[in-house]
Image 1 (cartoon, rainbow, N blue to C red):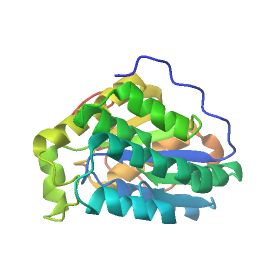
Image 2 (cartoon, rainbow, N blue to C red; image 1 turned 90 degrees about the horizontal axis):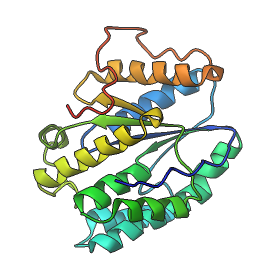
Image 3 (cartoon, rainbow, N blue to C red; image 1 turned 180 degrees about the vertical axis):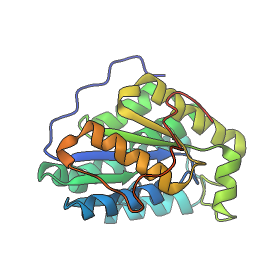
Amino acid sequence: MPTTPTPPTPGHAGLFVAFEGGDGAGKSTQARLLRDTLEAAGHEVVLTREPGGTELGAAIRQVLLHGDHVAPRAEALLFAADRAHHVATVVRPALERGAVVLTDRYLDSSVAYQGQARALSHEDIRNISLWATEGLLPDLTVLLDVSAAQGRARREGVHDRLEREDDAFHEAVRQGFVLLAEREPERYLVLDAAGDPAVLHRAVCRELASRRPDLGALVPAGGEGPEAGQRVAGEAR
């Protein structure tokens, strides 16, 4: 894993939350639930994704996920190119005006997929994205930990180019995410993706409220429920 310290994230007025995890982890569901809760509390929310959060990104997504074979290093560079444009045109402007930005995947996905599962240099992959984004890191990264078998079952036979990789690839991705969370636990909330989505959402709301009391009360639909899907930082479950 990378050994150099994480550079400071440039200051911004808003809040940046990334949802990470293997394919089928439920990232999109959790991002939408958090958007709804934050908007109900009166916050401006920008919900986006990588790749594909811009017009250019949509074209890159088509090549990366629905095209033919892409060489591993080209794959890594295409993800970084999407990220550079995404941050410059969507993420950073929203943060500067004080919005909450929720993204389905960010730079940790590149380290886990290309650095770990493609066996490229973790340091190189991370540094490419840090250069591309001018050092912008999320204020909180929610990692939804999912096994290869669970992810495959959740996808129900619908697979893009990366999802079609074998279970060994997806377990390597999972391990890459877990190692990243172990290295920077202060930036992560790690949850068992097998938990009930509503319970996981409440855990995310509690974490955000503890980190950013200025957000006010974040009351998800259904209120408080059983304490399940708790934080499992550093654990692969």
